[in-house]
Length: 264
Length: 354
Image 1 (cartoon, rainbow over the protein chains, first blue to last red):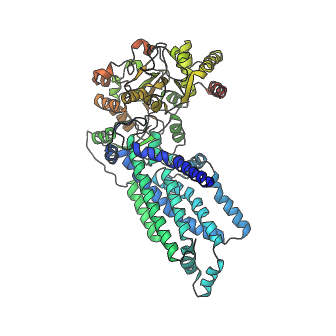
Image 2 (cartoon, each protein chain N blue to C red):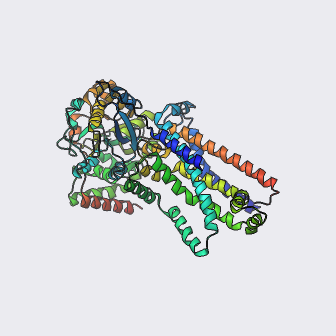
């Protein structure tokens, strides 16, 4: 009984630490005063202003576009790579896996500066394309690492059975393997999307030509104080992602039920 | 797959904007050209760029940065050929010493004549050849009138044990040392190690009185009345005073640091005439006024200052008297050895307080 109580308090504390800051931000997005310390009454003006602020709306546009493109492309490349790595021989697999882990462990600042120097060296002008390439690249390992564990837990005979029943390898992958690992592809995609959404360091060093994402805009505001419009944008972003996650969770729950719960 | 590739390429083409309007208006000789401007985030009135393009036909690619150092790293990589940079004093000095800036042709920047003479020929650009000042501000003391009843006019108050645990210092080597140097009557750019040691000793002595060494949080702490006194830059102080009327700002009589952010043209510029047109436009009295009112920092532009509200113009915390300004200094680059020495002493101070 006491143990249950402690467990509940512990869980509650974790929830508070995780969500209290975000909640504060949401509350202050309705604050009439510009301060982050004083409540000046309720207002919706920051939501109205954010739509009219050219800097914020431009960076929101690039943020979403880059995050969407980068995570879709990274998910495609990452999924194929994961399937490839899965069937490799042990030695090659270890080498390739370590090469995959490395960018994850590498500090963002190193990755960012390396990208910048590389793009300059090959003569690619910094801007939308360079930032997109950088985002795709740092997203790929996360997708791979999300899918590999699922692949190793798959029953390898299902793939062979598909071949025995007349499917050619592409069909077997498309109709048997992909649906099996779909939940992990989706989590990989979401992870890639969120990573891309809030990346600052790598974006900062790989962009140019007036292309800025939201984190760059926020970060460069720190000298003069963050505009309250940012609270409003963040609230909208947070709620959109929350809703997206809820929908996906609901869907996969339904899928699990449909398959008789055998696919957990 | 092919479709996706096609989609992406067409998308990129649209985004990079391949259409280029070439106008041939004789009043807009530079119409159709582009300049790359690199400035602090949120450091220009929202409509300025639009108005510049409308007036000159020059397209502006505008990028923000968050610190002089980040700007320097990006610039030095050569990744983007910037035409106008707006860094701070010591960074301009560094860029000049590295031969990175182009001398300005002031025939193309007639509006530079409006710049107050106090802001010309400063240490970072002694010949006034490379830069046109944009904004400036002092380092001073923000205090809560409810908690501090006496007059605040000297750095000494930050060493008064009466305010133990109520003082906020800046988490920055140069700024904190500047306070100590000015209190002792030294230059804040001193390269005399004995003076640095002396300043260090006074900062150690002050340590137990200090509530925290912070950067940006100082604003919320002061607005929330968590402390009585804070070392802060004037721009931030003005913001705090708008939020909490119990707060007041003072520039100590011993003098202080003042920073100047100025417009320069780096040697990577491919459109120097366009860059000069931009700098000239920024010094148009009405535009300068508009930017000053948006940002809230002090302007070096005499005409813009004259057009400000009387309340702002005569506010000594935004525009201190001439004799205080004369005791103020800009930061200049100390060179590698002294920078390391300052940093060592700063780390020693932070360690001694743990």
